[in-house]
Length: 329
Image (cartoon, rainbow, N blue to C red):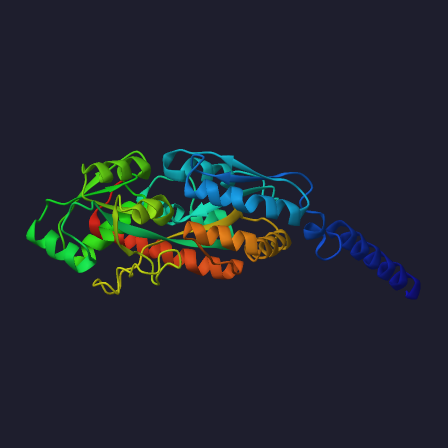
């Protein structure tokens, strides 16, 4: 009996050792990852603020991870095509997403998406927050948010505000402004914010909610007049511009943001390793200086912090979309 017990005990030990060997030592996934180049999917065309930011950070991530991080533009369907590429990729950390506020907006704007943001993607870290800016044509007799509200109420339906397209963050920045300021303005969607900005300067539209990097030099040159930024705090890049909230619309905040996400079921150790790399790159002085010049504020954090933030953004924009009856283009 004792011999049988001993044999069974040895057998259990051998099975346990075999399972441990198969699983590998703790942290093995992070120790060996990445084993090949990492594809960083940017779901927009080259040259925009998303692409510029990804290409700014990619060299530092490559150096930290020991493998090339290759920025790959996969535009289409308001960012949904590129996002779906990552959702369907193997959850091994070798395909990652440049996530944006559009992902949170699209989660409720499009009712037939084949994926869900919180279910099918795992957060790694926020990268930056980026204010939009309220621009007006300088020929208008408007020099402040209070003046804009007064003018809009005196001329209901006469102010046209442009955006880079229906459902974009700059479109919904305008929708939120209309709702909270109780003004009637007409939305004019364009195929890209740069086209809308050109028409603003030409006087074809009177108002534009734009990502700050796209307008900042035109504001400085006087070709457009910046009234306020849409973020909760003033932008270090243009500290003289007040926020919309402090300028007369309490509770207003509409901030563009960028982050990194990976396919759901990516090993936690890989997520943690990528998070550390992101945090370290965003702390580099040269990176900080370049981001500051673009008007971006680095906001790295933990995966849990990004998850909580994204959850709040989905709820916020779902409410705006429902109340304003915004539909996909």
